[in-house]
Length: 275
Image 1 (cartoon, rainbow, N blue to C red):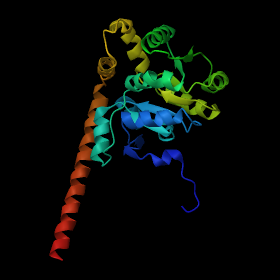
Image 2: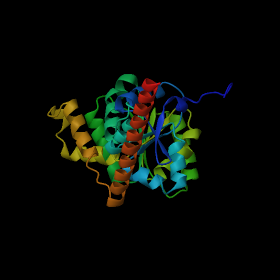
Image 3: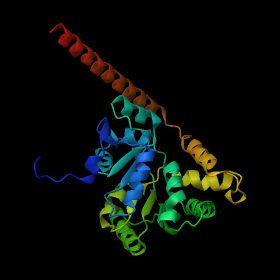
Image 4: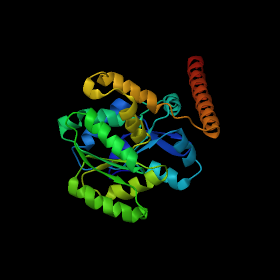
């Protein structure tokens, strides 16, 4: 429409799995976007949806709306990312929460970016904080908080006051879905300089990494090997049978629609040659 402003989120294309719009990006693209976000006013919250969340969104309109209203909705499902490629979005790729967090932590000290971790379990947050401080040189953690018993609106008000005072670049939320998406959508408009991100299983992966991976202080595991180890742990999540069957259905639909599109192109080409 002429004269209508284009939102920044509209510049990032989405492909749809059912009614859920997923951002057509990969890890490299997302990291570039995140570095830009840290240097400007936040543009919106970022969701991380695995296959189970996408499946649930197809049956929960409220959750689906939260995912579609985000600045970015990423997927950690390689199967869903492949569907995006089948739909013609070549830049699609899975983005695992632990990989995303790991990469941003590696460069945060250099750029002066700070992080805030918000989760459900105090023990997991303590392990995460210890692992991050011991593994990433010069990293600054603005704070951590455990989900309380307050309603989401009141919790968001209290968090916003704290975050606007400390101004971390990124707020990582490690709650189960759909509580995570609800908090992100409620909290983000209240913040002046912080981008809210759904952590997926990143907290669990990194907290456990502090217990199972070699001590980074002994330099026994280089950065690339640590990255691959975290990636392997991230991909170990198994989905229940209904989600796997739904994924198979989505892939078959994408394959059939792709074959129909190719068949249509061939028919048009042969028709133009006869003409």
